[in-house]
Image (cartoon, rainbow, N blue to C red; front, side, top):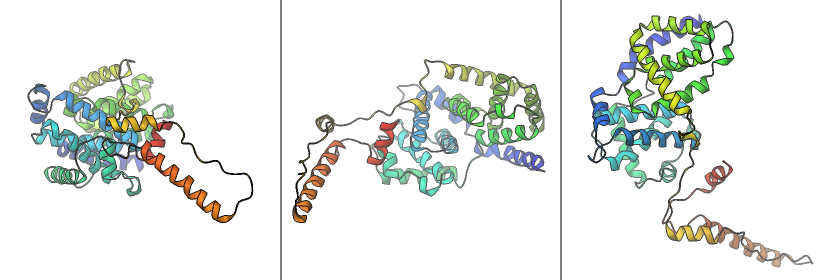
Length: 330
């Protein structure tokens, strides 16, 4: 019964995927745009998606949030003529919208913190207005049907029918491979069901499982995916993953965030790098009034050094304290 339910769910999503595809004419305009033409180019789009991957990893967001954000971004860019200077605002608004429908409310990053960590030059009000524009243009209500939707269903179906070596088919690895593909605009033209199946078959071949490849074949026949279409995207997936596995490739999820601060903030950070000197606590007996005064002096000294070390002149972005520890630990 569980297998029947999965196949029904697969069919329903397959029938809905066309509603969430970016306009191909819009994607072609982005691909053909020149770097100096004042338009969004394929390169700027790809770099923006890599930044979204870095941010989702930094904030601990799920793969679902990233994939949903990329879906919103591609559909909006393929529909609207966006100036390059507004791209960062559009991308962060897509991430914020996506996180609202995928993450628990307690895990959502506040808008001001999202802007600060993303080192963007717009305000919370700007982000709110852009979110409304994106939501209205795309008629955003809930999660889109994406390649991740099919990848998760394919994985469940495979585990349900496979007879052995089920543990070798890692969903986490498949999700990482999907994220690598989504960093290239060319994969935005693929149907989500086809891209997900191409990724699945690629992994099944790598683990040399004929049993699982037979299941993938039945999924293809069930959805009536043409052999030529699947083969074309399978070849592109193989090339992408080969490039991604290269040591020369800079993985977005491994990339450190770079912070741009003002000269004064940099000087403050450098001058307060050492531990501040605190007054020596006497070892002899002392009364309560002295202890209260001494405690206040120590606390005020600590507060001053903390504010200075975080760049409190407000001329440049800085790590919030609770995120600063996370970053240093990483």
